[in-house]
Image 1 (cartoon, rainbow, N blue to C red):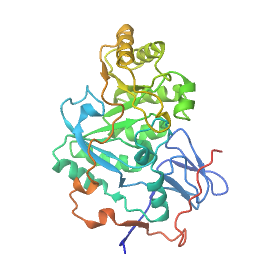
Image 2 (cartoon, one colour):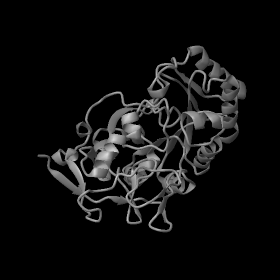
Image 3 (cartoon, rainbow, N blue to C red):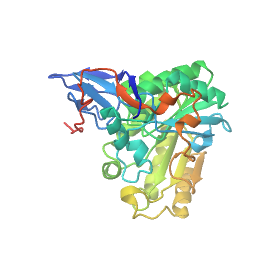
Image 4 (cartoon, rainbow, N blue to C red):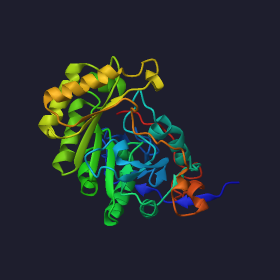
Length: 351
């Protein structure tokens, strides 16, 4: 029989109590209204008697060590190594997602909600200590959307900065102003998607964002002093219009600067877009031509990768120095307010 580890859920940092026990989560731009026993769209935040808690705090789905250029980031500490970490949950539901089990994390988050999870739990202090012992120069929050587990990202980033490590935040930029302002002092780099310059693309492929919302977040990060690099994954027949690429490059030039890097990546068939072929190289280099036409000086084409995915499948315990069997013990919350059944599993319904 598996041993149970009792742990305390961490309160969601940005929450707003409404009426009748409903609470709004203000981490991302969904701003979900969540009732008791219900989880938000990301499935990682749960309402327990009017208070929101983050199920995924300290829960790691993946760790990998690679060069910062793999994020992709090319104009901040080039050649250095970074420990990349991810959890579970996302504020998007992209039809071409390559990281379903990690990014959406439906099974993992259900198990956490039921108190039946064996997912690795690592304290913020232990993660930073492990990064230092691995002789990396930074920590990257990636694979899943960092805004979903912002409480942990914030705790790790604070300790990392004190230890002399830099921090990278790989995101869809569907984060609220409040959350961005909260984390900005501890984040060195934002690597953000600009998936398209058309709202209908976002609505079809990765609801619910709008172009204006995403671009606002990217610009705000830049204005807050974070080093920003952007990327676009070009999907044949969806966002491969050269005029869109020119518009994207012009926006980067006008809002982030002509020297701001733009990473152009290749789409590979996945999930509900598995019927669409991989992006032709001509389309990738055509987008780069549009970047040059717009006056961008640093555009990069990647014809061998489409996303920042872990290259190895080593267990989390391989990288963590705790040498503690409790890392993968069954996680059960120490609180008793939900009774023996644990956290209720009612799914989020948009209000």
